[in-house]
Image 1: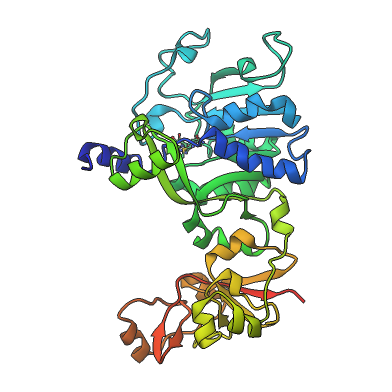
Image 2: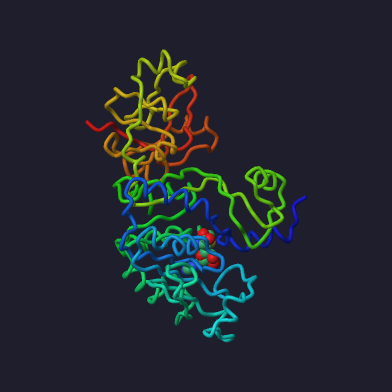
Length: 379
Ligand SMILES: C[S@@+](CC[C@H](N)C(=O)[O-])C[C@H]1O[C@@H](n2cnc3c(N)ncnc32)[C@H](O)[C@@H]1O
């Protein structure tokens, strides 16, 4: 049985308060290092939503400071009084520190920096982090955190999902390299999709993941508990499942340059795995000059026109192989000329269509396919 108090708290926190697991960060970062071991060498890395008391991003980069060859690590945290979820007590790490200030602890952000071996242990690690309170609350949009962004080479974090649009705009304004987590929905944001289309943002290695995060609240729903347990975590320790999560980045990795291995249209129709393609071939949209391709594996290697493919394409997109023409829905669909839907077809779809959506006729009946990205093979 779901507990209303906990669900209410989770809602209030607007899903902004959950913490990434160390192993998930490690797995993603390793992929960039495999491609280029010097990805982080001599770089200043900023983690702008991260307090080492709970952020594994800070832990990971501090523990691996020397291995990655970092020049400087900066991690800033957001004041509890500014958060939507305010259940917080300062830990011994803070209260036993000479910099602890009871008047500041709830209203000021903190900055943690790592550049050198401060404790004489012979290595630079998390124990060498030095910290102090910020002037303000640590909002990434504040002038002092913007100034830190400007000093950084690479920004890494899991930002608050509710501010994802603003967060991406903030990074782009600073012209920085980045690696951040976000929800798959973000692909469709009018502020994000054009960046994907123009190869300023792409999917990391982890794409459409069901993540297990640590949260300051419980999710007692049975499906959550079952999933969390299946991944080896105890839901009583406040672990929650968040589906459809994706790493977004502009750092190079190897998968991005591996072209998809595809069959011709003819072979897909004869031998392919997609049932719809085998039954009816590739349908054309009624309101845009392109064919519908219902699965990534059934993209025909020999088609030179525009094709509508599912979002999952972005997890395998190789910019040397394809160009992205646009998004086939809503405002972005309209902006590339996806036409209107005649009244009689609209009525048949009973409200399941919006301006800018692609549609096709399946057995004579109008149908809007579930979310399509329009692509074209590079010549
Ligand atoms: C999804 S959590 C992720 C925390 C951490 N990056 C991690 O993955 O473990 C996002 C964090 O950003 C904080 N936050 C919310 N709004 C913020 C803002 N405007 N500026 C900086 N941090 C903010 C939230 O309080 C929360 O701790």
